[in-house]
Image 1 (cartoon, rainbow, N blue to C red):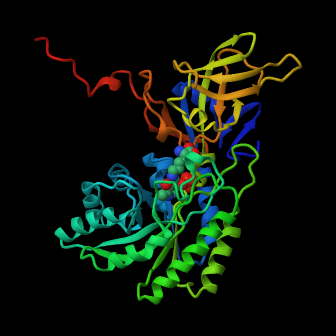
Image 2 (cartoon, rainbow, N blue to C red; image 1 turned 180 degrees about the vertical axis):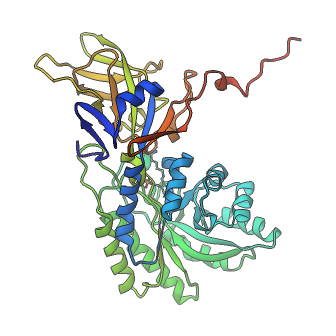
Image 3 (cartoon, rainbow, N blue to C red; image 1 turned 90 degrees about the vertical axis):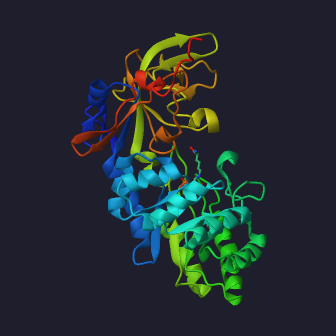
Length: 424
Ligand code: LLP
């Protein structure tokens, strides 16, 4: 398996680092999320090496995985965070993250979220519209403050990824059209509660080619140069996140190749002094996690064979939402023979869309434990309790040790916050 080097079979059993996934499934039950600390470090190192000696800040796009253990680990490694809500800010603070390294993105920031972020002292607000700019100025100036901002511009480039996760096209709701940006910057210079510090864009997610980044960069360079000529000086350029990971056989962007070109182009444009901010999410955590699930039943019909497992779309929404492909690895694989069938791996939820994988040739028996691969990003964070299913526990493996970093939800907790109506 080349997808996730920290998850390897040893003596016939899939391990996370030095810990057997059979043992973890026995000890904690299934479904179960298992992360590898070393895999987080590996992914971080990929960025650290590519950015070494450059003025840069990596802000983990924490919507991909916001477990406090993951956040605190990245924080210790020097990361900042890209947040999109007051809730995410609170998580950063709870994990001991540095608010001075936080960028606040999102199209719908509310006044209370702006206030909380100002109080915490975030590095920058990535402002996505003129009304947001005005509200932010008002919130900041009534507290005698100035909010540091970037405008998130929409460069109208095609990231050539799934339409639901492409964000840099004209028709997307994100950012300010790049042609309109100079006027909004001018407006920003006149607002009392605003201090302009940068420019930002994020063109999409699971991007596997360099050219959309470079096309966006060229457009941003032109904008920055024009602003400079008007006396509007920026300190940083935020290129967002989006670098893809290998779910199956995708070709990947090498951070070092991409960023060398980015720095080269900035230098050639006389903008070598700018700090480069990045907001990677998936590429820092995606292949650092798996979802363990136990086969409950094998069911055969004329048209299909189903492996009904105990994880479902509420635990991992990506297959049904994006038609996404996740690898499926039996934790203790059985030999595949000519009689081995192809299965759709499906959950117990009452929806036809409740599937995790389709047409996988696997030798399976009820009771087998499967690892759904690449479940470190947009997996737990997109989970729900649909069908009143408590969310799984999350485990962080570190060498030979493992830590419960989120307990399994209890059945009672599902309706903890609810009340029945009075009798009268
Ligand atoms: N910055 C901003 C402003 C974003 O909107 C996102 C992701 C990121 C950074 C991080 O992007 P990444 O490096 O993870 O690609 N749920 C989808 C992905 C949605 C991405 C949303 N924005 C999925 O499971 O594929």
